[in-house]
Image 1: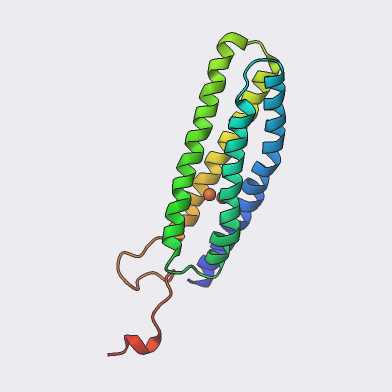
Image 2: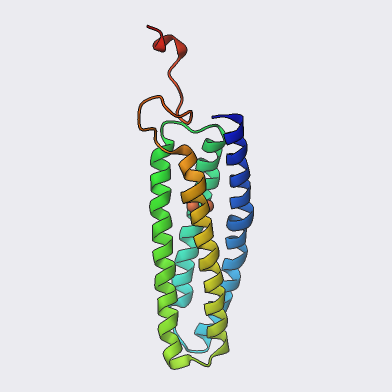
Length: 170
Ligand SMILES: [Fe+2]
Ligand SMILES: [Fe+2]
């Protein structure tokens, strides 16, 4: 990996952690409290569990990135990074589906409780989280992950550990 790419990777990882990982961790407890308020008003009884499941999946995903993916990337990548990236990308799709399902669920609640202020606050809060999550996923899927794309031919990009110099002589 060139020094320029290494700087780019490092700056992207910093931005992702500060803006998105820390941002989601701040937002989720507030949103859970809002969901509990909505439930306490007798509007629905599965919102807290549904949101908690999303928050737990997101936390496990971010932890995996912070403990495994980001350190691997900061060391220049290795032959296993492609599998990890595929796995994390599948989780991104699952997070977005779960968020869509929760927001669709809330939308159905507005039919009977359209004037409830707590419900509207929760909907707005979840809209913000969904927007931040979409930006987060885009930064990883479209900016960070492509820097470690699987090479089309053996030994092409610098993200894979090259064989020792002795094996490449003729
Ligand atoms: Fe992330
Ligand atoms: Fe991610």
